[in-house]
Image (cartoon, rainbow, N blue to C red; front, side, top):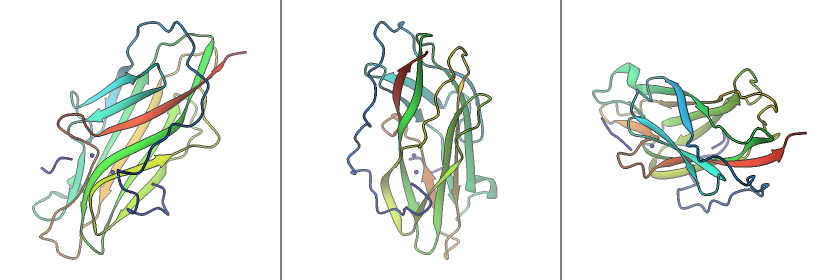
Length: 211
């Protein structure tokens, strides 16, 4: 299987991975965080079998990253019909100071694709806190020909904040879908994965004190 990793519905593959990525202005992370790593408490879906996804806090709690090792959708050639759509549903727990709330201010989705002319591939993604489905699923599209590395950026508005006084999980959903091209013998693919973890999804955090 081809392995590699996938912006908004109206945005095409013209944005490449070389696009500069600048984190949005955000409140500084509160001091004296506990020495606690982000934890994946549940994972489901054909795109993230157990043992193929990791999460890691980055810098001074200003962002976290997700990385996959087996998350590729493909169509054409000898691919099975089920290979054309892959999905992943993650629930994350982050044990921060209880007197602060956080939101995801920006997400960089980084991926690779091999999409021939006259066809397309899509990434769908969103995040919500458990029990608070405020953030709608967004679609990012690559139209062929589109081969190589790409980066798509989401800056949600309004921000979805972790409710104060509760400790819900952060639920992240992604889906890759690839459509067959005019030549059914050629394989089209879209991937959020890399064997060495070099292709990562970066979630930038913003902070505010709870009342």
